[in-house]
Image (cartoon, rainbow, N blue to C red; front, side):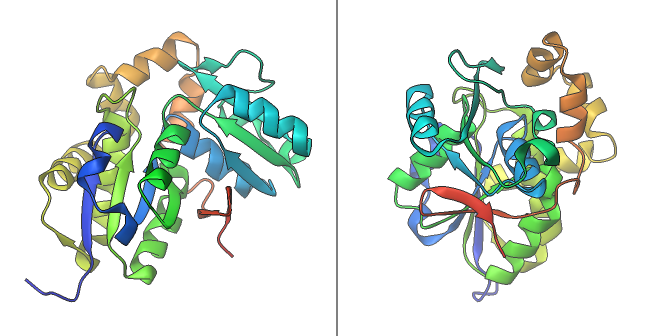
Length: 244
């Protein structure tokens, strides 16, 4: 085994994040359905920045303070007290351009704050819409990587695991992988890659059902489409902004 490659680990749930050394790695926050897909889309469509917060109250407070758009969901629906939800289709260029969005979600923004609390210095967000941007960054950065799946209320989910597997497939020659959860994610992705939506359907993925019940099939299909919003959101000074 060559010693000059950085290591890559996959945390399949926020409940497992404490097992990894986040302070010495680039942490990729993965919440495919839908937080990190919406973050990439909002920034791709011209948002100035996105401020991820872990509570609705904080979202409202900051939104008032800086006159920003406040948005978020709890259990897949617009959170009470907020104007907008967590669908990428709510943030077209003509609406979000040059604005700041304050966002809170059930899983993704909470995981980001957990990583910060554990000392993470380098945080980016990843989803299929910005898959290539994430992979290019990780290859260029040559740092240890932790793929952090937001999962669903600490329960492992299929879509975030699939995205971790997609990253691994693209960067596996550039990293050392001695991590069974990474191997599992990679195997799952290789099985699913020709039809991610069909795979989610066939496997009765819990989040597929949750969002389909709200009539959000279009969101699911978009969030599983690679490189439709191919920018890299990086966390700096309390905000996610595009890495220039």
